[in-house]
Amino acid sequence: MELPWQIGEILGSLRAAGYQAYAVGGCVRDMLRGAAPHDWDLCTSALPGEVERLFLGRFAAAHTGAAHGTLTLAAEGLPVEVTTFRADGPYTDHRRPASVRLGASLAEDLARRDFTINAMALGPEGEVIDLFGGRRDLSAGLVRCVGNPKDRFAEDALRILRALRFAAALDFAMEPATLAAARAQKGALRFVAAERVAAELDRLLAGPGAGRVLAGCGDILAVALPEIADVLCGPPCPALAGRTPWEFVAETIGAAAPVPQVRWALLLGGLGRKKEGAAGEQGPAPEGESRAERAGAGAEQALRRLKVKRSFGTQAAALVRCCCMPLPTDETGVRRFLAHWGLATALWRMEAERARLAALAGGPGARCRRQGLERFEELVKEQLAAGACLGPADLAVKGKELLEAGLYRPGPEMGRALKELLEQVLEGALPNEKNALLAWAAEHKK
Image 1 (cartoon, rainbow, N blue to C red):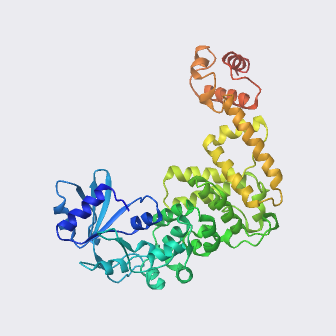
Image 2 (image 1 turned 30 degrees about the horizontal axis):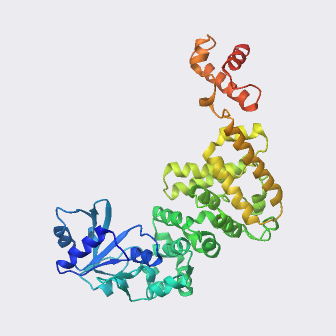
Image 3 (image 1 turned 45 degrees about the vertical axis):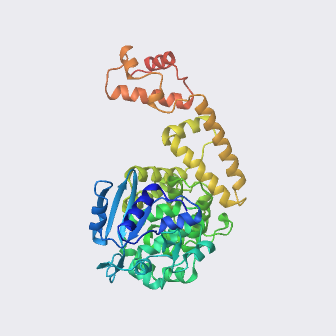
């Protein structure tokens, strides 16, 4: 396994100075899978101060985890976390050890880690040091805790979500005892900070195994994301080919492209649905706009509680609202749809609809919905190719032209006139041409 030169230099320098040093954790796991590591973690017998002095003047050192013996070296564009061998003291808050003992052995350091696939180290000759069967589990596609899973999850409840995330991201199965312990101790997830829940859910939803993990572990996730509880408890529905709403949500997410806005919107899309209205997946609910507003408001509230980035939360909640509305199949409707939602949301809406159709797999109403989607996609392409006017910025007439023509002065009246002109163009009643727009404005000036 070939290491980046920075990693080789750091490991070589530590060993030349008389210290033990190993690549450890996720980077070893990824290399064994034939994947490029996203992060580089090293462990060593050197204390943080010794590491910092050794690389003084070569690589800048940041004390990113001083309490836990961790320095981050900025190795010419590659951040490398270097942590002193440690053993953790007792966990008292279900999240962090009350104390850390530096100067432990490599074996003790590996024993404190969460999962076997993350508890391997790479030795000086390229040998893999695997004390807990990580290579076996990697080959078998299993997420298994190091040691007793009840102990691991009792120490740090975040590991429950991490287990689900790794199962989704790697498309692995949960080892039975590990899954049973996660389910038994799911209540401890209330101790996990909202932003950490959001980060793990985000990575879970991006994984190729997301649909399968959601389908099998919804009860665990509902502790961290209580907003999904009603959807999770919904009964089987004939409109969903006999599946429960949660089963349908999971299959839909599994069928969707791994676009964050799309998968989050599909996850949160049922928040505005009444329990007896689970069949709303088949089209707009009788409540129409109120259904969309309830769902969007619920998604906004959930995302705000999770402290996701505001811009992302706005996009995902808008898509939730959009997914509650039927897709138009006429030119005017498509122009209005694009003008209201924007192109990005429209493209995400199409992906969400494709995923729903894949999950329906020919169920009730699928053929009609597929035809509607195909017609909508065709019209969107036509409108974009024709350079359709979809907003005030696209109008051939702006406030400047209305002012120069002596029709309006800047103010509310001019704003209303421009809004009316846009309405006429969206309806197809007026061509988006300067002379035609000015003539209409002059004729309808109050």
